[in-house]
Length: 314
Length: 300
Image: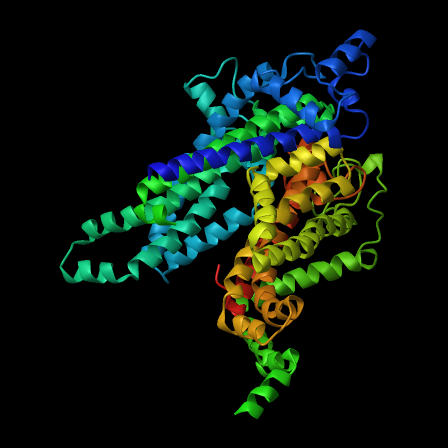
């Protein structure tokens, strides 16, 4: 177990390095001179010369990568082209908002998925099962940016119950004014994981229920409630793993939903960066989100191993 | 006894494969598909959509790019424009038809290209193992370390808006997925007895791959590729929705959805139409690929 953890953590390091390499390359695949991608067009000659020297833009790529990495490790992601503010400052606030949105959606999706998937798995072949499976397919197939628009039309435009855009006035706080703003984007974002978790949990439950030890337990006269404990214990590792990865996907993929709801998170930041061709912001945001995803992957693997002893041998 | 062995070794490998009766397998898959009503409905809807977007000029007299300021945002059901008009007075039905062309093209092309490239690399990695496998699979791991939407947005964002850049970005997202699946399917075929037997009778690597490995792995890899089409359609339109991918005034469902966002207060039904098209297409692809998986008896 101990060695597995060490090995898994050590393996994450080259992955993290390679991920930063891909992010580093973003500036270089952007059309034109890299300097024009990271500095505004009206930058003074001195600034251009300084940045060129600082990032070693006249040196070979590996050296540039090293210099860039040294900056990034110290939290220096460069300046935003659009407003000249450090990218890191922009990112801090935005990442918090996205984490709030993504984790709420993840919890929602997980709960809905477990309930629907559990019901579908236990009552296989019934109408309830078919409805849950239908919901799962719809959840996976729906373009969620469109679903967001539909929710806005129904709950904001027609019924006027919930606000259509933003995250509420000023700083985020856990009060009704702000939670009202969170409901629609979180529900929209939760639809995909809800569909996926429903599918996964249903599959796992069906598989567990068909195994011999369940028949044995039933034969021994175990009551249904106690049987549920056994099923949950066996279904937990897979379901939690799916959910953990989903949280990462939600954080990285919230750009579409954030665009619909003008939610001030990393997705919104990416959207603005795309419009203003603000490559430093694009690069910094991508790097931070990807690193969060790498960390989540690692955590999920470790948690899954801790929960499921069978994994350790693999 | 000796003579018999010699004859067996002289039968070309292609003959042996033929005797396995591949044709009857496909006939059975066809039968199973025909009996699966839900899959047939989905395939029919998709077929009708393809016909509609091919014969768009016959179905709608309007030019999808030609607008008129005096008939902007007409509601669904307007005489002459039965699905209404958009924010620049262009006929909605015509734009949905022509928009389907781009949406389908941008949705399917990356998966098709990734099927060839990723499938090829994955089979190579799975069949040869060793350091070839190591190189290909570790590179794949890096791309897997990105959430897929983020990777597509980052690459096409850096390259700049445009269909070509969106296609490149999406292909790069799907190649690693195709590699992973092809590699694992191929690796499990590699050690099967008949592959071992073919090798021991002196068949070269290419022959073994062509005759014994490909027929067994292409099915599962293809089924996996079809499951990606639905994801790809949503992602393609999503990229256009955030201003990457297709540029205005070209009609594309994701882009139309974005430009109609301002109309949700005045013409809510109209504004959601492009999204309905994306939803129908993607759910049909999803269900059809599920049906195909069952019919071909491919396990996840």
